[in-house]
Length: 170
Ligand SMILES: Cc1cc2nc3c(=O)[nH]c(=O)nc-3n(C[C@H](O)[C@H](O)[C@H](O)COP(=O)(O)O)c2cc1C
Image 1 (cartoon, rainbow, N blue to C red):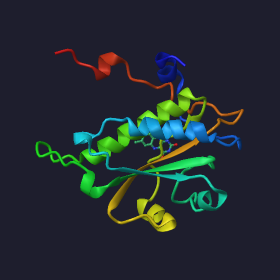
Image 2: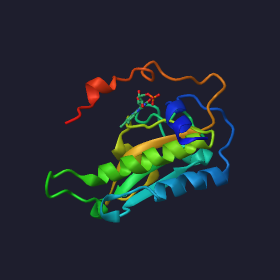
Image 3: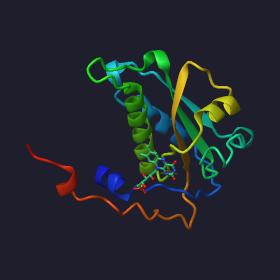
Image 4: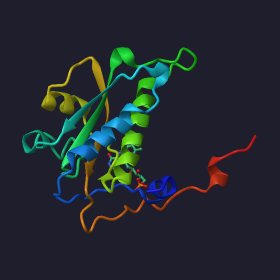
C-alpha cells in the first residue's frame, strides 16, 4: 500500500472477524513500534501482547473496550524512562506512547489489518487483571485483527475540520 493510501483509508475498526493475525504480521507491527521516535531516544515502552483466549478473557467490557479483537496490545511506559520537559512540565512519555501506538496502527492497516485506538479503559483494572508492574504507566490499548465483513467506519470518521480552521500560516 502507498503511504497516501494508508493514511486515507484507515479508520477505527470496531468489529473483528475471528481470523487469527499471522505471527509475521504481528512481529512487523511490533517492529514498527520499535522504530518510532521517542524523547531522548529513551525507548521506555513496554508492550504487552494479549492473544490467547485465556488472557483475552481478562478484559471486561465494563472497564475496557477491546471489541473482542484476536490481538490486543497494551502500550505501557516505564515511569523512569518518561522524559518530563523542564520547559513545559509535560510528560513526554505519553507522547512517546502515542507515536508508538500510531506507527503500529498504520503498519497494521498497511498489512490489511484493522485497529482501534482505545483510551476508554481503567488502567488500575488492567494492571490488576494482567499483573503488570507499578513502575509503569499504561497509556493505550490497541485491538488488532481482520475487520469483520460488515465492519464500517464510525459516524465520526468523515468529520474532519478543514485546514482553514486548524492551520495558521504565520
Ligand atoms: C487518544 C484516543 C483515544 C481513543 N479512545 C477510543 C476508545 O476508547 N474507543 C473507541 O471506540 N475509539 C477510540 N478512539 C478512536 C477515535 O474515536 C477515532 O479515531 C475518531 O473518532 C476518528 O475516527 P477514525 O479513527 O475512524 O478516523 C480514540 C482515539 C484516540 C486518538
